[in-house]
Amino acid sequence: MSYAVKELFHTLQGEGGQSGRAAVFCRFAGCNLWTGREADREQAICQFCDTDFIGTDGPGGGRFADARILARAIADTWAGSGRDQRFVVFTGGEPLLQLDAALLDAVHEEGFTIAVESNGTMPAPDGIDWLCISPKAGSQWVQKGGQELKLVFPQPEFDPADMLTLDFEQFWLQPMDGPDRVANTAAAVRYCLEHPRWRLSLQTHKLIGIP
Ligand SMILES: C[S@@+](CC[C@H](N)C(=O)[O-])C[C@H]1O[C@@H](n2cnc3c(N)ncnc32)[C@H](O)[C@@H]1O
Ligand SMILES: Nc1nc2[nH]cc(C(=O)O)c2c(=O)[nH]1
Ligand code: SF4
Ligand SMILES: [Mg+2]
Image (cartoon, rainbow, N blue to C red; front, top):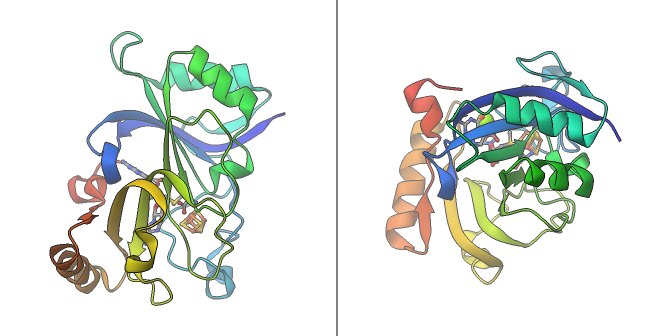
């Protein structure tokens, strides 16, 4: 199978339990909860997205004919020394629309630990080393286990208290970016102070101006 990739870049994971760690980001094109077009945002299931995931025209992006070719491109994007500590984050768009066993195997063969950022609307395949689920109100949430739950906050339909019985190791609140970012951040800080199983996930890459 071929893969449509918006961009490939090497940066620090900015969010959640792996934040600060060097990673290749593989951003797949396309999402099942929004077309990505501004004209469609108000009709979308997910309306607060901060990402351009349309097309394959970003840095390092393109259509990759098979899993080995994409895995090789990911390895070529890793700018760290040697094979040690190689880490890839599959995101998008929605990565589980395209990520399959062949690609997971090929990227593992290149020596990478594999993280995924998903909206949780599809079951995750086996073989992911670090699965982050970030559920979206109004969607069909099916993947209810993983390493971290990263709830963009606030989403009025979601009460974080209802999520603590789910099968995650870590629970993160990430303030919703946009016009209410400052108020959302203050609300998330308050919530974490009062409910200490939740930790605050800031989008640190935005704070320091890296991709
Ligand atoms: C662009 S999404 C791509 C992965 C997947 N589609 C998802 O939603 O989890 C990557 C991460 O950014 C988060 N995110 C998107 N828009 C955001 C915003 N406006 N404020 C805070 N986090 C946001 C998502 O919830 C997700 O955790
Ligand atoms: N630095 C950095 N960290 C991230 N963590 C999750 C991201 C994403 O868009 O999925 C992201 C991103 O876009 N950049
Ligand atoms: S599910 Fe993820 S990629 Fe899709 S629109 Fe929402 S935040 Fe963006
Ligand atoms: Mg991002």
